[in-house]
Length: 213
Image (cartoon, rainbow, N blue to C red; front, side, top):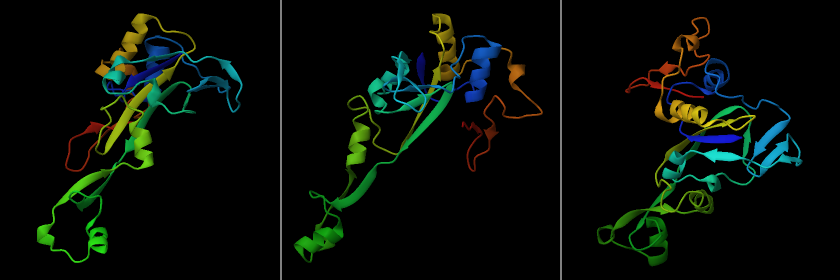
């Protein structure tokens, strides 16, 4: 089973910590670790081959759809792998300053129209919808794709069996709501800091925030 949640884990558990929580501490389920099994958008395959082992079963958090991300957001051939994955996608739209009413920058406008008085011209900033951006934008529910530089954060887990409702709800709360892990002392390893929890790092001119990997 593939379960997909919105955002990085707000509980500060990184991928290894979430795995430790699910399998060992809270015993919520068993994750798929078999390296011979690979979850892809098109189904579950024998790793490195096109041999389909069985169809994909997937549950997506309702929070994702609220944010405009459905199953169609993931492109053909997308690989989910195994275990726990914390994923971040960066997107930066391209903008261009053009002479108002055209799609020409100042140099292009002068090359076509000859000498012009700058005081007679108005300028505007437009979003360049190149092919790559249009393909990316099309992955979102209509009208939900951010039009500025942004990061999409997603966490997914692959389990060997379907989770009971209480286990799914607990994992969702750990990832999306920032619920506190039970037996917190088990995640604090003085001899190996950051083994299970994302470390807090001081950002210049800002406050301490969890950094995930």
